[in-house]
Amino acid sequence: MNDVKLALLGSPGAGKSAVLVRFLTRRFIGEYASNANSLYHKRLSVDGRQLNLEVFDPCSQPMDWADGFLVVYNISDRASFSNAKTLLRQIREAQKSSPGVPVCLVGNKQDLCHARQVPADEGRCLAQENRCLFQEVSAAESYQDISILFTQLIRQVLEQLKQR
Ligand code: GDP
Ligand code: MG
Image (cartoon, rainbow, N blue to C red):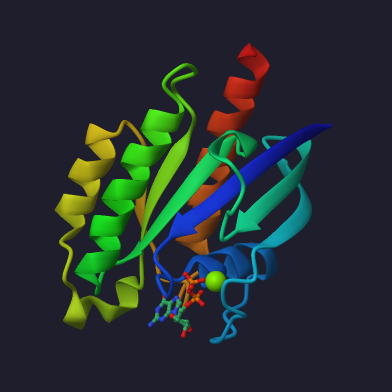
């Protein structure tokens, strides 16, 4: 069985825990313990392969702990997008000797589009510059997109682990 370790990074309040809990339980609760540095476990199968998923939220581990990263910002908070840019750069710098760690940039709170401060295209461009996945989601309103992004990221991680 494969172990897959993912790290959740992003500004406080961006919705990291909401995105993760939505994926793990299909539910949106509304309020989440803050800065608890929790490690979540789940067994799941992707493309018929059983795996042990571990997710650190928010990730306080050294960068090399993770096999893949989710960098979350809030589309209605430009400061959280700036922070995501910084985090993507830090991930790249930390990985210089072993490039290509899978990353997904996640624009959360898509339901707040009336208060949008970050156009979807800007998110997409930033992801392209960093050669990473990109997905806008709403942890509050939908499971589908979140499930797709975790699956894509896990697929990339499994590919990488195979090559090691
Ligand atoms: P974290 O600090 O990044 O883990 O953020 P949380 O997951 O604790 O979420 C911060 C706040 O944003 C909470 O009040 C959540 O209910 C809210 N929130 C999270 N995701 C969404 C979303 O998709 N839409 C809306 N409207 N609110 C959200
Ligand atoms: Mg949290």
